[in-house]
Length: 256
Image 1 (cartoon, rainbow, N blue to C red):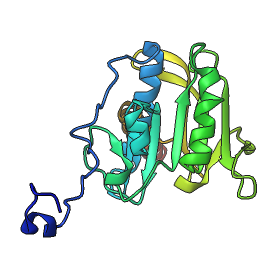
Image 2: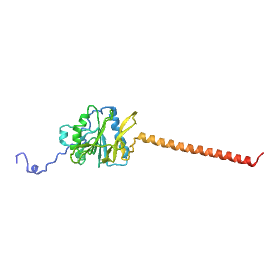
Image 3: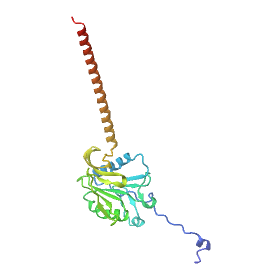
Image 4: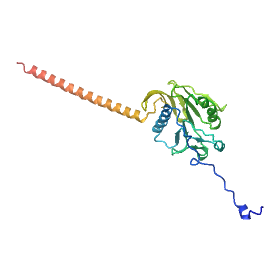
């Protein structure tokens, strides 16, 4: 024992150094999405899923958000920020970033990357390797909001790598781990009408946005009003016809 260390100090247990959490780690690289269309597409996917699953509290959906999966990654400043990801069997609390060791080792179950000319080689190369080999993310989807390239993959249990998903009869790619599907839908969002990547139920029903729900409600109200107006007009015509028949019958009974 060195002369500078007392017996009591030597007997004290070593306090483990905890890895940094989401409050200590960087949560943004300060870079915006590739284009406004990319931002809109990310927002559309996140908002529509949250709306459809408003009754659920056992999942988290995030976008353009760092995911930390190893302390070595942190030491190398090797940050990963999927454009959209979904994690099941967790809570829907707010997070600055997703830190795997603060989530009982949990990593995303589904990742969606929005392609661009600058990132597509990374999304189809390095990121695909990390998501399949290290994260073991069950399903991985790629979509270009401008060219509308769309592809999806799931992990092959034998090779451990990704294999392409086959579209169903509607052209949708199944996202079975979420009990949903992804497909293209032509329509408006935030003033832009184009083909958007959208969530669908397994039965093929579109998961609507708030505006689409409001439009559908208005259409139902208009249809109900039309039916009510039509019924009123039919009743009025029937009453007029009855009156005319009564007048004809009275005239027949009392000829001049």
